[in-house]
Length: 239
Image (cartoon, rainbow, N blue to C red; front, side, top):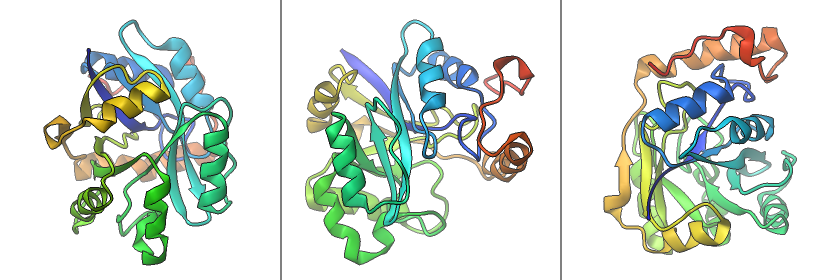
């Protein structure tokens, strides 16, 4: 089978998004994704709700973007949330104990908690399953180009992700895989034969990125990262 997967996406469970889990999965299905990892910051409530409400034809993978003491990591196929703030090696070990997989997000982004901005952490690449070779929210500089080169140098799969924080961004970048990435083993097998032709490297516009500070303010009022009720009437931007 052919799968269209985005392994990095946020919902209103994150402190910097106001897109409800229901709106995000509707947008993903509408735009043709078959698999979507919900990776909210340091929590999985949004991913669980997205999984429970996903429309037919869309598989939601429960994940988390974990802020480690050494930088951010993406963890997927989780059974429980992974606590932030610990060394990356300890965090990876916990994810492995759950049977999960780990990737490095936006590894050279100058403006975020990007692990490989510190050359001393390049050894982390040997402990993960993929690198984000193209993150749609990396703007300016050569962060994505550096990430792609880093992945090639270690022989790691380099994937494309949206890192969506609004429904407008869902599916703007994604990875096409041959196989069934619905399980850890299936995802690893599909990534093992990934080629550069499998990447769809779209970009988030500056306008869309400007929504993020607004979302942060809204979530501070709501309770800093608390999921808004589905009936709260937040704008569904899926269009």
